[in-house]
Amino acid sequence: MTDDGEHANRLATSEHTNRRAKIWIPDQPGAWFMALGPALGGFVIGGPSWRGAWLLVAWTLCYCLQFSTARYLALLAHSTSTRKGARHHGHCTGNSTTSATAHPRADGQQTGYLQSHTPSDAGNVHVRQASHTSQTPHTTTNAGKFNARTTKYKARLCKAAIPTLTYAACTAAVGVPLVVLTPRLLWWAPVMIVLAAMSFIAAYVRKERSLWGNAVAVICASLMCAITSSLGTHHDAQTLVYALTPTLAFAATEYASVLFVKTMIRKHGDSRYYALSMGYHLIVAVLGFAVRPLWGLAACVLLARACALPLIKRRIRPMYIGMVEIATSLMNWLAIVLGAA
Image 1: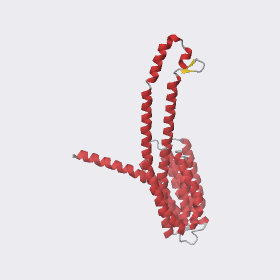
Image 2: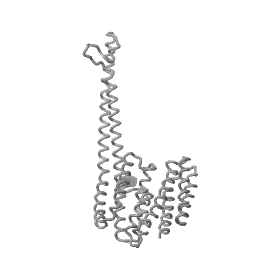
Image 3: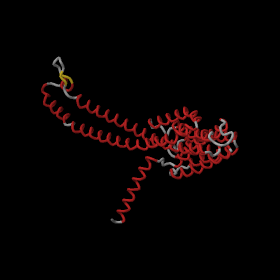
Image 4: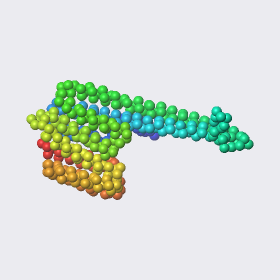
């Protein structure tokens, strides 16, 4: 085999591996940090413990489960809408084929095309009917395409269900024993169940990247700071105020990152989103100084980033935006953890 052939085979194998990996593993480093950062911060703030480490592993599996389930639900919604559209198209095609033909009535009169034509037009009627009959292969072709598309989506759904079921089993295997040993975690169950349901609904209606869909994800991830810190070794780790203060800081700054990324990619050049992002960052900075001066300084860095970068008219590649986001998120994480210590 030539060098070019070997190189092509390696590229094809690499692309196939990457596609399979994307089904199992979230491929956005920024999303990983936003999902696991608050939990890791709570682990440090509350004091490292074996229960906290166990919860970190369970939460990582939960994140992978949410990712795979959201992909499955989005694919299911797309498949359902495609089938409905195909059925509607087929129904309309069938109606257009039959509406122009003659329909006998009980009273001997005729409806449709023959009703408004004289007997001398009978030959034209037969020609018109033959033309409609000739459309049957086209309808059959559409049905075949619809069946092939349905089979394709069913195969993709089965493939997408494998990671979901696997992560569900792993999450249950890791999480159930922890809950049995730590029953107080059940106090958080109602809130997390509601947030998970809202996240899945957002995925099914394909609104997971909307403002409310992002807010659900941020709240869910940020609450893990309070939950993880409540399992810590510090004597005041289980007090509600001690746990919720850094949780609110993570929630506020992570949603600021959401708005910043939108002004850089999907809403680049949108003055309304830019004004919304600037106003939100400014409020976060003021509140940060009111609670912890270090948090206020970190919020000012986020504000400067949100102010300057979206003004660049030329679009910045998402890879570089992700690098900036990871750097500022790491700075903000350190500020929140040090300020809460």
